[in-house]
Length: 566
Image 1 (tube, rainbow, N blue to C red):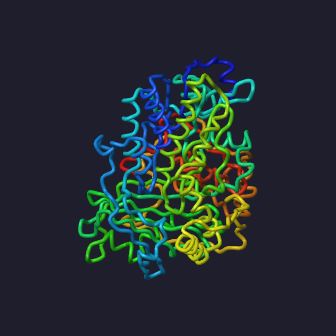
Image 2 (cartoon, one colour):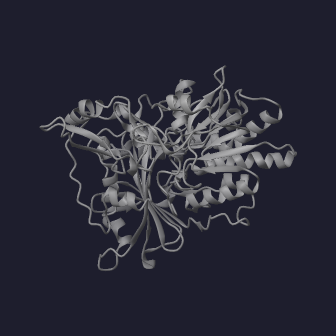
């Protein structure tokens, strides 16, 4: 049965009414909810607010570097220190390494652009910060429904957004309701704020429906892969923020790595690769594993004899919306708004988005509150983008507007032009460099490239994807329709495999996509096997598939990763 047939037979769905429905309990969504309730308390005119979260709890699906600029948090909750916010380890030193295959050079801090200055920032677990924000929101009277993914946008007769519907539970792989079937419910609102994070499932639909990106550059993304380690105290420098560029990537591929030294001998290390890369044989996960073997990096994980004595604790991956202000779509439409990374407010030059998510959550909440108390509903919250244009966040993003585009032209050009724009012009350059193609369109055919020989994992410092997914605590109910859907099931074998060497089996950081022998067809025939239960909800496949044949839809609530300390 199709979802439409299920609704026709088992409907109608129960509906609940709210002033504001917020999709996603991340930094953006929770900040919006908190701000709405703060305004209600200040002005003694309450608004009803609910937050939907597809993860098992707030923070379960949250993945970030993360170094946090506390500027926006201080605006939202000025006494966050007194209230016990988990921002404990301030950055004490910035280090930037340019790596070659065997060596590396640390750039002098005085030569680093302002975007690499983390003075006053904190090394954090963003998941823990989100859990704390959820507590603050609930104390203010916000309803939070974890394990309830928003699966569908609902529209009024005039085309405005009416709210969302949660997904059905207990539907089997065959599409038929099981004994555990439960029909989804509808949540109607005067305004709906979409705060789903990068490449939001519903946000993507809204951008297309309302043509919100008609006057923007094509959006650009990256994939961030991250591990949490506990290392030897003698190798630990609390507050060190280390970044690297160069090896193992070739100079024409945008990307780099980080290692952040948090408290308690913990380090967050990760690798970011722009999804506009050209080589279909590139394997982002393996590039990250290889980076850890560099002598300047491996030292942190070993003892004086070179033996690995560190312990890997957790693993995760997530797409990053990295196009910056020039790729920012229109963020409002009748009945709702895109907030945080669902719109693309991340500052890729600073590798920071949490402060932008919090700030835009506040700005959207201000606009929504004023509209609700004025008796309005289902119109455009024009005050939200207007407030953004006059905010410090707009000024920050505008200064760094060319960063990602320059690095698309290679490491040398990117480094040189970033230095010129940030050091000489202080971000006030009189030019803008535009992008003209989406990431998926930049993937070359396999015939123009050679396969890359990656070393086998040793299980101590380097690992395979399946053992990594295991420590991400990823789980899905197996008896449910695959949430990784194909518009045309013939495309992977008919086009992607012969022309692009099956890139889906490499760009996925969780081993979801696998080409296996097609026994039914016989001979050397292959088929694409989708291991949906491995999915960490990074959205890379939805972005990078060269034929745009893969569409990520929401699975049952509570599924996916359950990140701890990430």
